[in-house]
Amino acid sequence: MFSAKDNTDVKGRILEVARRLFIEKGYNGTSIREIAAASETNVAMINYYYHSKYNLFEYIFEEAFDVVMNRVFSVLRSDLPILELIEEWIDSYYESLMEYPQIPIFILYEVNQHPERLPERIKRREPYDIFLKISKRLEEEAQQGNIRETSVLDLLLNILSLCIFPFIFGSLAVKVTGRSMDEYHEVLVQHKDYVKRFVIQALKP
Image 1 (tube, rainbow, N blue to C red):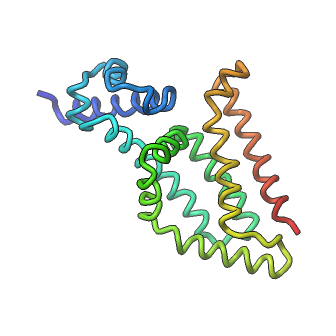
Image 2 (cartoon, one colour; image 1 turned 45 degrees about the vertical axis):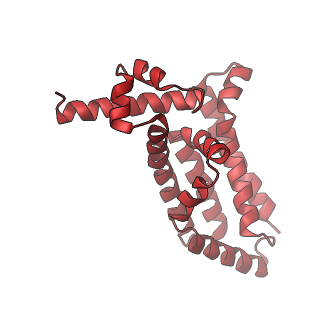
């Protein structure tokens, strides 16, 4: 019989291996048997702890998604000057996605396979008040001549696409360029500064 510590160790080992394999191979490219072999467990144990591959995937996704959303929303709720807030917003995405590179992969899977679930995940975090506040701030700054007139949706789409695509492209970039993942991470650190300059420049009147 497993002790509580054994249970925790086994569950943790399964999670770590599943994270790595989902990142490397995607959801559809990863099998329960691969996770079992790499974590030195078996299919029955994975089903006992997580019930299915999708439940395991969802557990990992929710855990990481919570951290990312909390960081991003914390920045967006702040009263920083608008351009500084936008830089911090971009920082929060890049830093979170470097820590949780599985997030873009999971989002793509959810959008393709369960398109109704991702909006529900976001709605549970009550984003409307936050984006209403940002929308009002953008409007006020534009009226004062500090920035160009910009909708919060346009700004959100720009930031999301510029921040998320480099992480989706990561595995392909490493293979095509012959760089290591560590080298690509160095590129991402520099690219983050480029994205901040690009977004800020687009907002300047």
